Length: 207
Image (cartoon, one colour):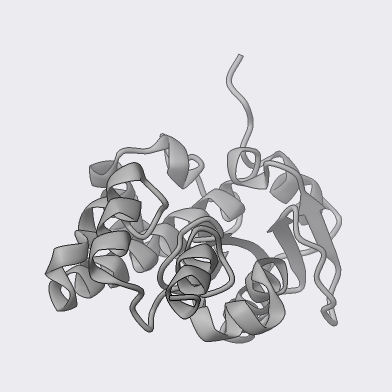
């Protein structure tokens, strides 16, 4: 039986809500670069066959859905929180901040928010849904927008610092990535509080 990804949205439409925003973030795990969130309001009862959590889609499919969502959405907001802020306030709070930034960008403003498991203090109701990116079409759309936006930023980082191969690993702590950081050192764009970056910095300070 196919999962109805509009289940939550339909229930809210029936309750009289019409501008339902889904919000999600990507980039909690990488060692380098920002955490990026998106918020998306889709048209009522919108359907996009095959759209799902961005982690379950190929890069080609994500980019295809990215273009369709950009064209069809009522409104899209993006929030970007830098590595420096991540180090200052921690990754959970940075993710929350990015989501709030993305929601603040929406025009028109939503009258209800579905978030991917994140509690948010807003002036409209918020429903955090665990695994929301796989259960709600609005959150899945936000997940795709956030993922493709961040991946494009990582490709640009890769051009700026080709020896780190950032366009390949997108900043995630792969074995190859860690080898390259050990070889070439820690750039400003790295998250200094994340292991093994924090360990490498301690090691270089102790020399």
